[in-house]
Amino acid sequence: MSYLQAIVIGLIQGVTELFPISSLGHGVLVPALLGWHNLVGAQTKSESFFLAFLVGLHVGTAVALLIYYRKTWAKVIGGFTSSVRERSIDKPDQRLAWLLILGTIPVGIVGLVFEHKLRVQFAKPLSAAFFLTLNGVMLLGGELLRRRSLANAGRIRVPKGKHAPAAAVSDAEGGGFRRLKDLDVGRGIGIGSSQILALFAGISRSGATMVAGIVSGLDHEDAAQFSFLLATPVILLAGLYKLPDLLGHNGDGIRGQCLVGSIAAGLAAYASVRFLVKWFQTRTLWPFGVYSLVVGVLCIFRFA
Image 1: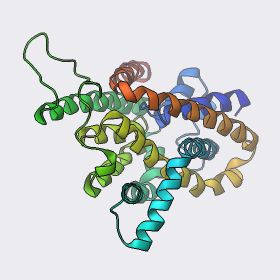
Image 2 (image 1 turned 120 degrees about the horizontal axis):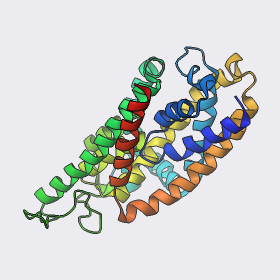
Image 3 (image 1 turned 120 degrees about the vertical axis):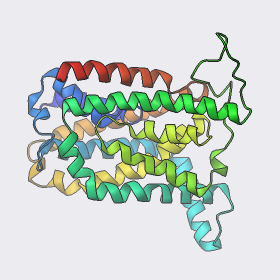
């Protein structure tokens, strides 16, 4: 692996891990489109230097998220300790701490058992293109379901005819009918469990959790925040769990590239989360859904 490849893949991973367009899917498709066959062939091997390389990228992304949300994580840790001490979950920080813990457990268990098998089986260009297309359908479908939920809750009026509101209803128009601080445990676990879909290359972790969030009644801003907070421990722990691969023989000859790539991923992730936090204050998932759908279909024709 060259340093140029390491930087390009690092930047792509840092952006697409947070943008709801699938980092793993782009990690499969971009090398194939660029003709980097040394990376494409390595992705589906049981023992792979490329998978070891991705470990460092995930740690870099997680560190960027921890830095951006450092004040929130300080409150979450304080909420957890006070919850244990007081044996209560009445305060918002206490509730958020337990939502993050319980929402992370399902994907942690499934990931430990199936992540390697699914990556070896589906980390192929055609499979990634197919799942990226499904990712687009998921994002667009989530916005349509959100509009219906808001209409049923009386938050928006949907008249018949050509003047009906667009399928993507912004938070300025509809908002949400639940707040993150009031989210119940069952819905929190459901949103966290949706991360399991991201084990398939092409399905976005942030996309799945955001769709689950807005369908559950959160507005885009709260859904995005909960999504990024949920992703942080999963990405960090997954990277640390596989760190021995990078330190072992699979990391021979790529540790310098991994360091450079992880720095690129961290910088890209920090810039991405700053952008997306502002984006979801007023905008929707609709453009990312269209992008996933179009790129996924084009790549299906390319690799079929």
